[in-house]
Amino acid sequence: MAKALLVIDLQEGYIEKYPPLLLACVNERIQRATADKELIVYVKNTKRLRSGRKTNELAENLNINSEYIICKESASAFSNPELQEILRQNQITEIEIAGIDGNSCIKSTAIDSMQNGYKTILRYEYIGVQNAERFEKTKVLLLEKGIIIK
Image 1 (cartoon, rainbow, N blue to C red):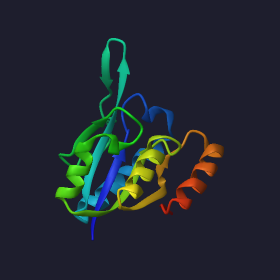
Image 2 (cartoon, rainbow, N blue to C red):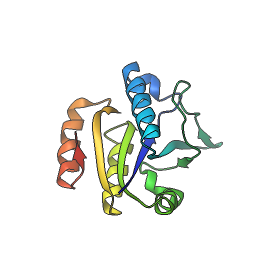
Image 3 (cartoon, rainbow, N blue to C red):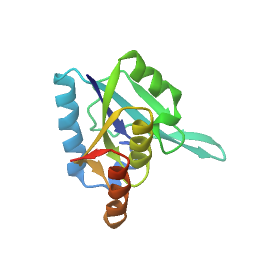
Image 4 (cartoon, rainbow, N blue to C red):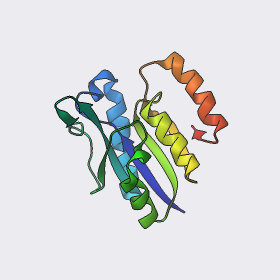
């Protein structure tokens, strides 16, 4: 069973809204994924502006241990067909998702991951959430869809 770690939206301009401990925890998980030879894919959010598109750089202190860095223009990382191709080429069957925010991009990516047939895992220490009360409802939905939350 081949595993992948998706690191979602840990970018300058976003990460500052979350506790610094989140980045440290995700960096530790990236190091473990690297040691375990798991595939790591970094996903950057791209905003559509009147003047064009804007993509913030990955967070300055984020460990970059993979050549796979893709962009998305909507909540789910699966909105970029390149992700499916990377996962297919690497024969991935299990995906763990880390990053921000649990109520939006993490949620959408996790649901799409399950719908595409991947075993999908979220771990609290690697997920940033701005609205904890709303995330309680989000967790119920994700669990109903078969997503593993630890």
